[in-house]
Amino acid sequence: MTRTIEQLSEAERADALDTLPDWDYDEARDAITRSIVFTDFAEAFGFMTQVALLAERADHHPEWTNVWNRVEILLTTHDAGGLSALDVELATAIDSILGG
Amino acid sequence: MTRTIEQLSEAERADALDTLPDWDYDEARDAITRSIVFTDFAEAFGFMTQVALLAERADHHPEWTNVWNRVEILLTTHDAGGLSALDVELATAIDSILGG
Image 1 (cartoon, rainbow over the protein chains, first blue to last red):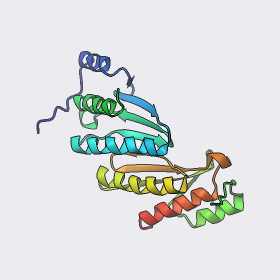
Image 2 (tube, rainbow over the protein chains, first blue to last red):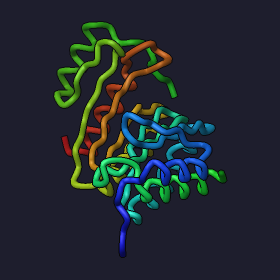
Image 3 (cartoon, each protein chain N blue to C red):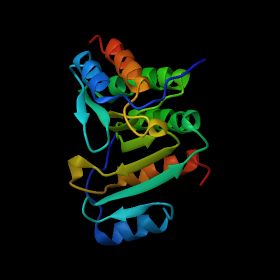
Image 4 (spheres, rainbow over the protein chains, first blue to last red):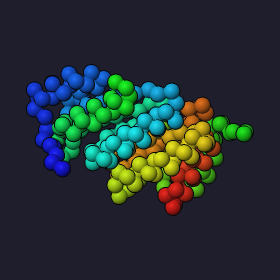
């Protein structure tokens, strides 16, 4: 499988962010973040399990925090030194899980 | 089920920490924390799934962060305003999963 792990250019990033309105850009990390509030822990962790399987399949993993019904996700690509197409793909897949 | 959700006294906390040598006390949060490094994401998330089931059964949940093979856990009891017996029980159960 060929993988693109180059950091996105500023123009590519702007285009990507246009397709991901639920994500915020974290300039300090060159990352994107999304916070989601679920009904309860079971729903939050169920979502995390779906994302974990996607992430493992893509071999690209989130940085994330869970506090009961809340999940905070940060996506960046260490190997690329910042945001890459892998993050955009994972964010898009996460949005699909969330019905976004 | 009867549940103790009172904040531990200083003496109770000291006794509890003696039984949890792998946990650090976070004074600012009146919480205990433990960081664990696994081989990879699959192992880290497998552990989280075990903890999630325990936590759900106990109706007492961790605050936690995962970055690939690392998991950082913080336990405190919001309803008690700090560390309670519920945290000590969950920490002990987590140690058992980890073989500690």
